[in-house]
Length: 248
Image 1 (cartoon, helix red, strand yellow):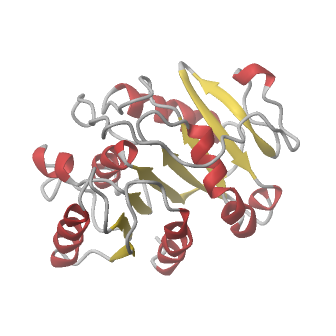
Image 2 (cartoon, rainbow, N blue to C red; image 1 turned 60 degrees about the vertical axis):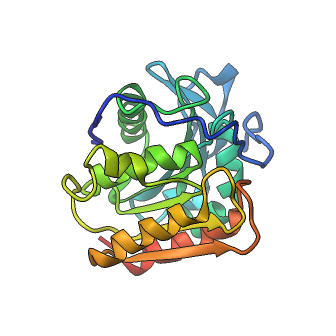
């Protein structure tokens, strides 16, 4: 289960949003029931584990042929888990993996205590509902969610089999000495970033890439030429392909 790390918040990144439609209220088999139910056998909806709300997508094919892979995706400041799940829907339904979009406690920043505790609650709930492949748990984050994912993913690289971030910074992981002192070992990492991002400069992605590459981690830098801080879903498929190239 993920460790809590240091109980501080990520920054808000000046009001970043996730870009896509929320698509959180529709159901294809599971029931949302006002956002208070556990996930259904398949479909998409919203649920709660303890006090943590999250959106979920469970393609039918993810439950066929053995334990299911799960990708956790963390939204930017002012975003929602449902908006992130919507971004991953097409790829998840094609590649047959579960997607979980957790909502941060504040909606604008991520905490390394309460939000990790919330993720643990979600994982426990999912394990009671589905057969999960614990060698195929992946973490993804955008903007403020990427800052948080850098810390949580590196600190818990013995839990997560891959990490992907978009428009984030590794600064918190370095500042709090998660990198390089306290990681669980190398995992594949995809770093996505726009070259024209004025909120989190592209140089942050380049610096993170250099750190991981220098340490021998399997890492790729995916660049959106001319892209600003807005979410670009085109990095998702390369991230998934990288994860499959480096199985645990």
